Image (tube, rainbow, N blue to C red; front, side):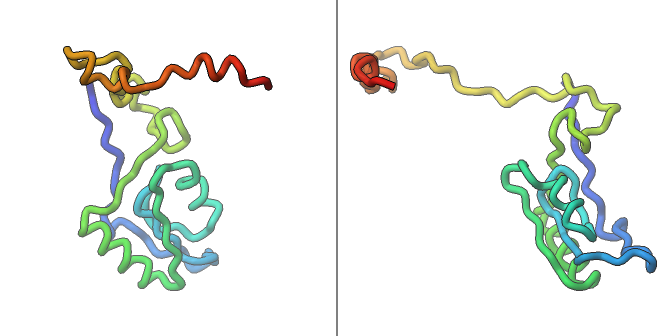
Length: 133
């Protein structure tokens, strides 16, 4: 199975806005579907909303934004987490190349039923059948 590793731009790859562009602010995304420095909230929102643990910080100057991004990059705290099949997922990477995280089985794994968590769960079926909705 091939594992896709999303790109993390080096600070030297980030470019200040074009002189004709008027940024609302300088938004640093260090955890999101795409990471870097962005100039408008709408761009930040589409890269971070719905992403668990997303981190974005607003700065007023390019120098402050680049300084923070560089520090987080050097700390190894920048992570791109594109949604599989989403807008920031590269089309050349198969969705099948990503395996979902394995979930624990609900069946007891212990050989002793006394050690099983399932023996400690109360049967609520009698109580639930008396609830009128």
